[in-house]
Length: 269
Length: 326
Image 1 (cartoon, chains in turn blue, purple):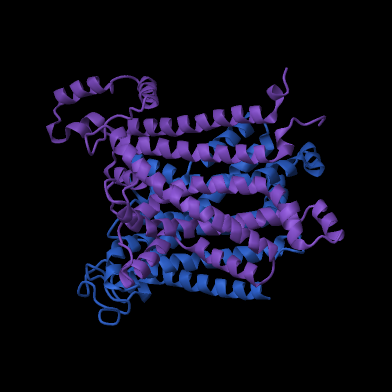
Image 2 (cartoon, helix red, strand yellow; image 1 turned 90 degrees about the vertical axis):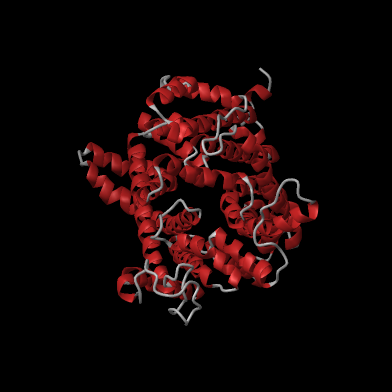
């Protein structure tokens, strides 16, 4: 019962945030990068949520930041999923040297702390949104590989798949009819977890100043810009960070529901 | 052949040390490859405004930059093994001199947090497992779900807001010098350590609970239950010894993550640790510094993960002995 409630609330929160991200240009009362108020205007005085240190409207900036965070998170997670699953299928079906090489590469990738790896790549390639998204996609693809590789291997060894192979069925037959549909339940849960960890990861890098570059800012970047204003005793600088937390909490709520739904064990709480 | 020669422990150690070394080689070589593709090199960067074709050429020869990439890589590697990581591009000082004090600061931060969070969170995880499905379990589960969804800088800034801005108990920034007095150190460390504790406790608690419950679902626990042994006794005498192996490994893995989590926390508090050093180096594209920090972070992370698996193996007698037959 309560998991149904969690699901409803989570979906509602996500839908609201997605609407805010998509409709940011319509909803934002001011252009996000223009100085429309006096610096550090209090909430209610200059704009609904006040102004930042340069007099830009906080609400407008948060709406646009949500957009950046959403887009970067979605693209990175989708790419990661596609890379990871493709590698898993290649490794699972070939089972030769390709399997060994991919497996070792994933082991190496997973043995290095992700944020350190990202910092090194961004130092070399320079800080840009594209680099950030690609780096994240590669880093996170290892988890999808780990989840789907055993499934691909098991399925490829199934007798009916072998029969299909002998019968001369094409690759896409067992790929789309057998392997991918069987991966969906575990992939969905992993995709949800990936979304929340990608959102946290992008936000952390932007917070460190090596994500999306000014004047544009995602939710983590907004916290970095406005953190000093905390000393005035206002919590508004932390609103973007609360948005990230809300996003992750909702996504995790949906994942919990999914896991409960697809799990065969009756005693999962 | 002695028994130990065949023992899984030995082959495990050999395999893991080898794969750890491969990872570290990989990361360092990756940086090398990347830097070699950059327009301009360390010679340009060091000379800055004074760069003329002649001086750049001279410095390139002096730094060995005219050598082929593999030669330069093994040269760097040889020096690194002796603690020589080259010269910082933004500071013109040997990287190692800048690195060591920062590393010590980061270790102080991470170990203080670990000393608090490990006993605390393992305890809470155990209590949650004992009271599975009851109010305590639900409450700790929900709280950890909330903490797991929060970016670590949010936790840090909330603590700053409450304890530094509103209550004025601790400084909002932790820019300590190593010569500072002990009370200054403690007051500067309190908030960053508390942040790390909150960040890590949810993970440790959740994993401990899962480990204990995993053991609780085995047949011999069912046997003990049917014999009528009280539940608390089953958990402490029957389940805990067998859950020890995963718990030990959870603790070490947490240490590994704490070492990396400091990157964000140090930025929140302006704490002079290695994470802050690395982030600043990335911003200035001080490649020798980034490389040294990256290799050091990865080495610590990989060693702690290795220790986690090794300890888990040593604690569990079934994994320690060679398997008979199959």
